[in-house]
Amino acid sequence: MKKILLLILLMGIAITKGDAQTSAIKQGLKGKVKSCKETVYDETVLSAVKKNTKRLNSFVSNFDERGNLTQKEMYNGSDVLVFRIEYEYKGGQLQKLTETYHELNTPVVITRELMSSTASQNVWKQVRNASGDIRSDTLYQVKSDGGRTLVIQDKDGRIINMEKYNEDGLLNEYKQVSDAHAKYSIWFINTFDYRKLIVETEFLKPFSPVHEEQSKIFYRYFMFDDQKNWVMRTNIENGSVINITKREIEYYK
Image (cartoon, rainbow, N blue to C red; front, side, top):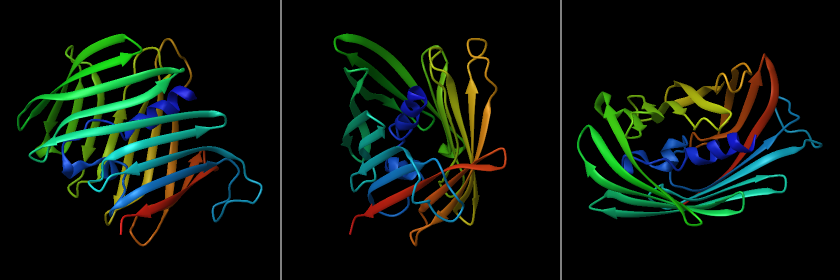
């Protein structure tokens, strides 16, 4: 579970293709969002949260006025994960991104620096420093479909994550592929109606043959505020509600 939550936390911190696709947009947030807190409850009904519901975990995201994610926190019982992100721009183009967080009490710093950029591909140098254990990689961000499909892969061609956007610039499909030590890869497919997210389908696919559990499929349905951001998400598995998530969103004035 911790590994899955870590993957979810990292989703909003992936390399962006510029201001047109900021972290806030990637998370489906509209308007000038300053912060967003998501709290997951385990005992639910469709209309409201029961008074005796139990909180499973909470996520808090903070954004700058560009819409870039600057800090993300996850609370899961006594476990707390905090990510901080810094950005460096030149001529409106993202040049460098630095993430800091702790993993199993080990401080980790990841920097991604833009090496080259063309209409079809960005090349990034990534350096991961975990208390002196340094690993350097080259990441290739391949763009297609007029920039609506982004695939990040390593030098060996292994796909790390994939993003597809619809004609309105909304995230339509997302795949997060972790390493062989993780339990699942994550795959989201979003369905929109009049630019509003109405159904999100999540697939948790186990890495076989190391993990033999069957893939899990979840469907999510939404309620929205006047900014067309969802404020309640109902998670359904096998036709039954298993939890809901409530959002508290603060906007820049």
